[in-house]
Amino acid sequence: MEVTGAGANAHAEDFSCALIGEYFGGIAAIDEKTIRENAALACEGGFSEEDRTVRAETVDYLLREFSVIYLGLLANEDFRARISEAVKFEMDMYGMSRDYENEMRTHRGEPPAPSEHNVVIDLRTFNLSVAKNISGRIKASMDRIMPFYEEISSLMKEETDEDAAKIGYCVCNFMYLIKAFEKDPSFFEYVRSVVRAVAGGLGIA
Image 1 (cartoon, one colour):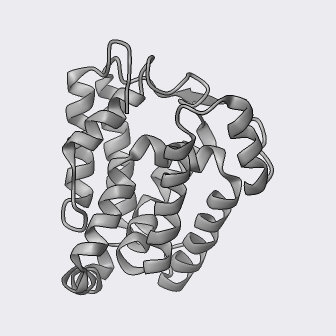
Image 2 (cartoon, helix red, strand yellow):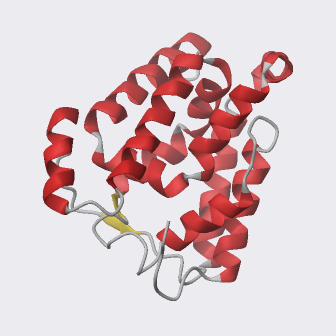
């Protein structure tokens, strides 16, 4: 992966590493180098501005349902595989022409509806208030599954090294994963269907 440009702000990089490590360190093989490479993709010279643009609705969904997606990654092999495949597809698209990418995406569902509110990810700067907001919303999401702490602990004990490696691949490549949620409607709908089923089953919908 070759990324040109000034690169990510050091505090933004460190925040990315700390956040992913805090929440996934117990269930994933964390590769800090990969996280920092993805932070560079979140800047001019990495992903294009179009590929760093995310609908506010997508951001809200991912922060709200963070804990349920976390549970899915930990508990379900098919879910891990589907997210891993989506990340790999986005990695395969990196550096390809826009025409080629658009052609490949025709097989993955209708483009998402335009939004009046978008977020452009840019880690060349570090905004402490935004970082606190993200951290607070993720914590609020994780608090929803704390009543199931014993069950989660049991799942963690049963996890294999292969499981941890696959989860690490998905979350450390966070920019490719975010792009998958934003650009791959069939993948996003699959995740939503799993989240609805899991949250409903746990009574936290």
